[in-house]
Image 1 (cartoon, helix red, strand yellow):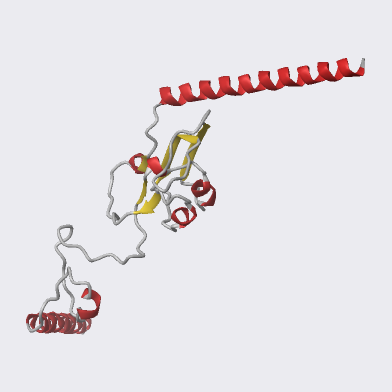
Image 2 (cartoon, helix red, strand yellow; image 1 turned 45 degrees about the horizontal axis):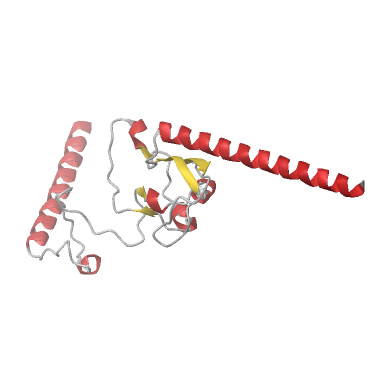
Length: 202
């Protein structure tokens, strides 16, 4: 008796599922497919299910979509605001002060700091977009790339700085020498001022 009930329920489920499949198949054949490239795709799209030939065909992304980050290092003034506001600490920046102006960004902002290191670990990124909001030169943006798949999680750590280790060390030596010269000049000026003051008192 139990076997008959089990067989009956199995057959009933099969018929129900098969009927639903045929219903969608015939319903789909009577409708017109909307153009995936159309700006009004989401408005024109009917309730029928369709399969895209991904990755050759993709759904259009909204303007406010949050995806992979990209940094234009030439426009970066190394202000460190993006690293400070990041809630998951996925941005790591190593700053070296320059001994003078080192150029200007595309919007005319003067650059006075070197980016010896500018790394973003996309494996940790939560795509909140806060770093793009606080950037004063808008050098960090979100791209339309979202389907990144890698077999090594370490490869998700992107390096945007173009400075080599040798160049970074050279800039550190220049800065140390510059600061030492300033210290000596300040000490000399202070000593001369004290001697002058002492001579006036005599």
